[in-house]
Image (cartoon, rainbow, N blue to C red; front, side):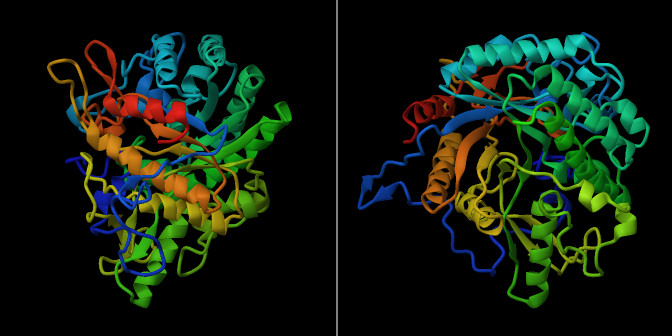
Length: 490
């Protein structure tokens, strides 16, 4: 966990809000096991099996791995500006080089093959396609992703593409950023350009990665780019992102009617810290704000009941026709999960929502301060399945931070990460057995990379990266994951 405040990639709220906790809304009892027993019965090992044609994958994000931030016509992103602002990122680290995947993408495909993976979730850098966020496409940028997609297909790996993983062109931020309604128009134009150039070879698309995180942390808490701390701007940004999702879906389908589309929604379980009515109500509201503020508008054309005084439509910037515009058909539901939360009203409201929340501390703790609690994964997958009609689910991210380094022989024996995946995958298999329609799983991450405001201090990869030389080394967790992918279970 960062020593500089709420700047971690997904868990910035764990520090900004002053609670411990975990769990699922529905009571304060903490009865789940940190290490589930589903893989053992009567002293013998039970096989954990996944459905036929289940997709095993790994995920990355453009700014975190590509580098080459000033090559081939790429424009400046908000993260380029943010990382070069003193004090924003640990050790002054930047993504200028990162894993050098812009040049080493063939090596990355080789790693995917060595891990027996059949799906690679990666993102396209908007500033590579439109350097200023508008206007004609940059041919060199499209050419890069075209080569990557062709290389994946030749290797028998599905390209699972994210249009936006947080690297907004800085020129658009200078013009107002995500709180500006014009950004939705610009994004739809960008989506259309990408689909026209690449949509013939890509079937599944994630439009936005974790919209709750980049709007809250970028515009509310300020720990991520662009670093603004304006609650009203945060609310407007969330609404404009929802408008942009609806517009982008229509632009995508106009170009490629058979494309399968979703967002990657990061979701957690929320439990009231006590059985008090206030804590229970706050947990319900926070669960809705964190999990489905960007899902229910797309599905139903409405925002969930979050604010006690009713929907602050004027602050959000809702105009006539907007709630029809935000609606979009989801062909699957992208779901990311990392941790669980407890909610209490003792510390007062945050963003005018009663109470505040923080991560659990009862289970083992990873090296960035997150609790390992596999049964929460089962809980959230089943909650989504119950609440939203057994939709097809793709796990877009799940993983853990452990900073194991090579030993004298070069081996990276990251047994804690291996145990993490064993526990979480066992719970995912249990959810599938109990009726969840999960079609694929993407580990975060394929390789160690630039971890946003944490710089290079946090390692999530199945593959170790020496950031001085770029050398990639498969960790023991990666070797185990490769066996799981080959056997479709463990």
